[in-house]
Length: 161
Image 1 (cartoon, rainbow, N blue to C red):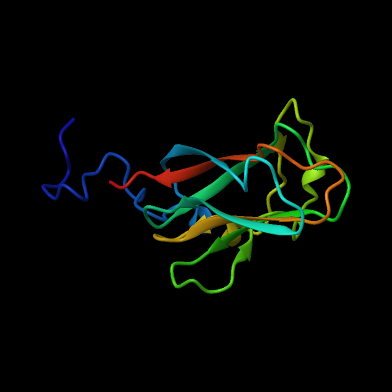
Image 2: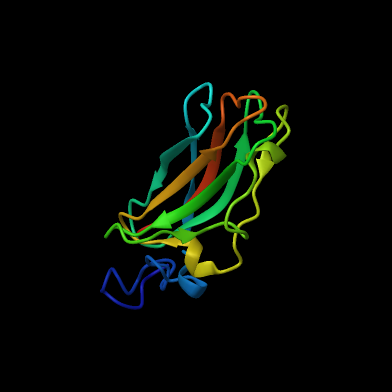
């Protein structure tokens, strides 16, 4: 099919699908980036906070689609929390990506992954180039020390035309 213009950009097969062109900043086209990262030591230590970078946005318009949490041995009892935040490239305070501020990491089942409920605030899930998704695991006094905590996530990375 012949193009109506000699301008190769105007003749793009899917005009308007450039970076951040989707609704509310969500990319219109993209590929899934699946990332898996352990959080903390293999055997978690009482009264210790573990921070872990999970994903760095390679371009603007990346979208956090899913987060899953699992463990080989789940934490039992104590006051323990895990939070997931998006930090912008300037390193300012994080923005929560969960539907709640944090969750109790002993709510998981060790034989399967727990899909976390993400915020409904779309802007909290959209990442600019260089933004980082972080996990913060806070271990109190554990009745049973957790082992092998693992996060798997899915981010949509825009296809840049």
